Amino acid sequence: MKKTLLASLIALLLCQFSMAETFLIGEEWTAEPAAPQKLVVACVGDSITYSHGASKRDATTYPAVLQKLLGDEWEVHNFGHNARTALDEGKEWNGQGGMGYRKSPNFAKSKECKPNYVIFMLGSNDSKKVNWEGNEETFKKNYAALVDEYLALDSKPVVVIGVSPYVQKDRWQITEAVVGGQIAPWQREFAKERGLPIVDIYELTKANEAGSYCDGIHPNDKGYALIAEAFAAKLRELAK
Image (cartoon, rainbow, N blue to C red; front, side, top):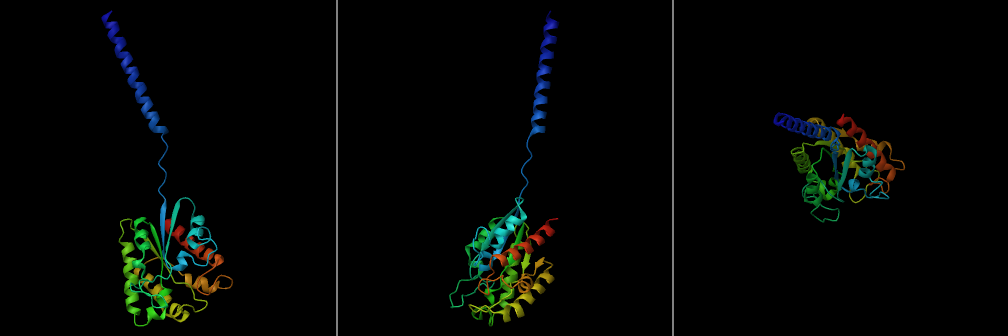
C-alpha cells in the first residue's frame, strides 16, 4: 500500500513537472519577436533642410518626404536651422553673429538621437560675403570638424555629404559664383578624399531648376521632393 502511494506521488510530480516544462517551452515558442530597431537618420543643415519655402513643414519638406519614401523601418529627423553655417563664427548677411551650426541647439539634438545615418548639407550660407571672404580655409576646417564629430559618435553613423544646392538667383549675399564655383567643387573633393558617400544636390537642382524654386535659393515642394528622392535612393543603397 505504501509503495503504491509513493509511486502515485512520484508519477503525479513527474506529470506536473512535464506540464510545467511544456507550458514554459510553449510560452517561449509563442512569444512575439521583438520589433526590429529602426534606422535613424539625422538631417543636418540650414533653412534648406529646415525647409523654408515648403508648403507644409510636416509633409512637403525634404526630410518629411524622405520619411514617407523610406517607410516605417526608418526614423527621419529634421535638424535644419535657418541661416546656419559650417563656419563656427558664421554671420547673417546683416552682420548678426552666432550663426555657426555648432552653436545651434539642433547640433546637440542631432547627436543625441543616436543616428545610423547623418545627411550633412551645409555651405549655402557660408557663401555670403560676410562669411566667405578671408575665411575659405577656416570654413573647410570647421566643415571637416563637424563631419568628424558625427563620425566619432558611439552610434558610428554613416555621414552622407549633400553637395550644396544650385543658386538659381543670388539673394541675401548667397551667390552662385561662390557656391557653384568654390564650395560645391570642394565638397565633392572632400567626400572623395574621406571616402564618404555623396549626393550631388547641386547638379540635381541645377538640372531641374525650372519650376523647382520658390525664391531662387530655397526649393519649393517639387524641389524638395527631388532632393528627398535622391537621398532616399542613396540611403537604400547604403543599407543593403
